[in-house]
Length: 445
Image (cartoon, rainbow, N blue to C red; front, top):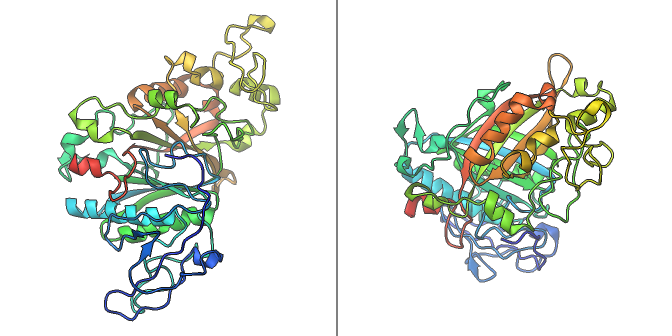
C-alpha cells in the first residue's frame, strides 16, 4: 500500500441511466472541480479508465487513482500507516439484521462506496444530482466540488460480531481470533456504554472535515436496514505522526505527542508490532490485518492549565518547548532513566508518562498511534468536554496494548488529569484486492 497521495489526471465517472427511469444528466464530484469537464456527463456503460464501476450492491469498484487521493486497494487497508491526516470521523455500528447475507452485502456495498469516495467520487454511480428523479440520490452531496482530501476509510470487526451473549450471530464464532475480546475494565475507567464497542467500526480520515463526515454519513445511509450507527466521534489536529515526513504534533496539554511512534518507513517494526501474525485456523483470515484500539480520553484541561510548568514537564517527562526528555538531548534522543538530579531523584520521574510507555519498560512492545484531539462543547460545570481520541494499531492487544494500559492506569502521574470515557477493540481485516470486498477472507477463506 502506497503511503503517498497519488498524483495524476482526474477522471470523472459517467452517469448511467438505469432502473428504467429517465436518466438525468449528472455532474460528478470530480467534474465540479473542473479538470473532468470532458466526458463528465454521459449515459450508458459507466466505465472509468477502462474499469467498471460497481453499481449498488456490487463489490467491484476500481476507479483510477486521482490527485490528492490514496489508493484504496492493497495488501493492507489504507488509514493505518498512511500519513495521518488532519481530521477524523470515527463511527461504530451495530448490525440490526441477523442474516449473514445482509452482513456480506453490507460489506460489499461499503467497499464499493469507499473505493469511489476515497478517489473523490460520489458514493454511488448516479451521484448526488443524477439518477431516477423519484428516488433519493445515492450520494448526499455535501462533498460536491471538494477534492479527495487524502480520504482513507478503514473498517474493523468487533468481538460482538462473532459472539453476543454467547450466541454465534452470523456463523463466525469459530473464526473469532483469540485476541479479539472486549477490553478489560482498567483502573479509573468511567466508560459510557453509548460511546463504547460496536459490531463494526469505520475510521474516516481526511484533510477536510467535510470529506470525512461525508464518508461516514453515506456509509450510514447505505447501511440503513442492515446496520445502525451506535456512536461516533469527530477529531481534529492529529496527535501523532505516522511518517518521518511529518512533524510531531501537540496534544491539548500543549506537549508534543507521539515522538516515539512507529512510522510507515519502518517496515520491519510494523511487521513486529502492527500486522497480525496468525496463530491458528481461527485467525488465518486476519493475516495482513491488525487490531484497532480506540479510547475516548477526557482531559481535565482547566486543572492542567493551573499547574506550574515544572509540574507539567515532570508529569510528562519531556520539555514542553522541544519535546526532549528531561534527561537531556533533543526531541528524538532516547531517555536515560538512570540519570539522577537534585536530591538523588531521577531526572525522569518514576511515574512520568514517557517512562511508563517507553518500549524499554514494556518488553519492547510498540504501537502505531494515530489519535486526534476532540472538543465536544462544554459540560454542565462550565468545563470543556475535551481530550484525546486515542487510536492505536497493534499486532496483538493481549501483548501490545492491555499490559501497557494497565501499567498506565495504575501508576502514570498523568492519570490524575485524565478520565477514559469510551472504549473499543476491533479486528481490522487485510486490504481489499480489486474485485473483492473488505473482510472477504473471513467469509470465504
